[in-house]
Length: 236
Image: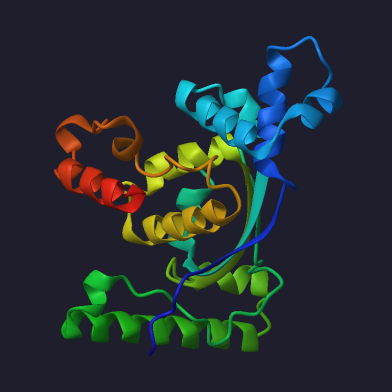
């Protein structure tokens, strides 16, 4: 079976997200109101203020900009990890109400690379599909038949995070120590937000990329220098 590919689309976001962040920042240090401050901010001033807020870690100003993503082609393994990021809103395709007959599934690259392992994996999925079909044919409700479904089952989600939460999410999930699937999704999300808010996410990514050091200690992936070189190349 053809590998299920992750699809990430930025569906909606705060209009002029960087201007909103800049307004919040200026409001903190000015006696003027937000509307008056907005009129004074040209594009250069907005970019400068936003980058400054990110660099100094004035996180509350970043919370006023939010981004909503549609994500397809991911497993329930991924979504179990994703919901640990609590400052966010999620909706997921329901297995209670959406029938899973012939469900698509995610195959880890490590399994796909070994023919024997992949054959065993695919057979198990086929057995699970058959069991699900048999249970529903016996009149078992979908909400109960789903108990046999695999974590590999493909799902679709809607995710909304503010910019502060996104930066934290990218710090953790763009890291090479994050599991491959959620790391791939995080990198696709980062590419999407950079299109609409480049100043806000100019330094986003794994923690080592924006701090110059690895926070993992003895658990480091050992690729810090390589990651920093890639960032320098991107910025050149």
